[in-house]
Length: 169
Length: 78
Image (cartoon, rainbow over all chains, first blue to last red; front, side, top):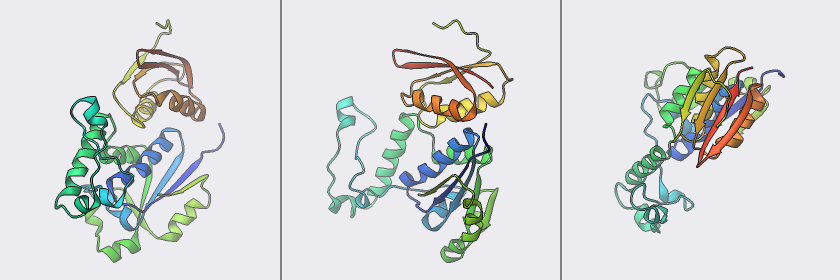
């Protein structure tokens, strides 16, 4: 086998849908005997909090299917045409859409973000939190899970300079 | 049905990407070289993913069979 491949990911988004790709790819890379580093910056930083409270905001994404995780197959397949005036203004709409998406994921046998994050750490994926974003948004290390490294752009780039795969999510 | 003898069995039915791969890797890590893992999955994507995973890690999918939506993989640890 050739030398160990390296994956470098920047996780910059904090909604539930965008929380998945970094953790899926990093955990799978580790399972494929690759090294993986995820650098959490800007809105990706809260994904390192002990409790992940990521949500989806359907009014910001017209491509997001609005489907129900229960009922007959025909009912579940129906894509509800929710106008932005409702999804963007109705109090609690994001919370409702978030719990529906979580329920769908569960039913389809998809791991939770927390589970994937744990599996990343178990398999040696390194998490780096952007120190600058922490200062700007006022996060403290106590809010984050254990095992996180702290650094800046140079810390990430030192690793990424030798990476075989570099992704910005 | 396959006649291949397996020493460890892993049920990934109902699980979706990337869990079958992650669980397979975990199971393989706890096995001896040459031992065979029997993994079952219902995720249709696992067919292509298992092949790619084996390709990169050097473990071998000795046999793959499909019966009414359930895929069975026999994976020999390198």
